[in-house]
Image (spheres, rainbow, N blue to C red):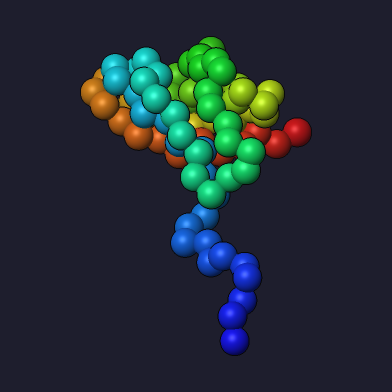
Length: 80
């Protein structure tokens, strides 16, 4: 018996790589449509929080982000 649905091998995620606090490259995995980072800024009220706007207008964040060295972060969607 053959099932036409493809098996998904991971959870949807939106990720960003930073170097010394500056965005380098973003990517999304197991998400459609594909989104990228349009803008990224540090939160003025929480030093270790990065705020991101995606190309589709959605807003994301990551907490506990280091501003030094290279770091990969998984972004979390903002909730109203």
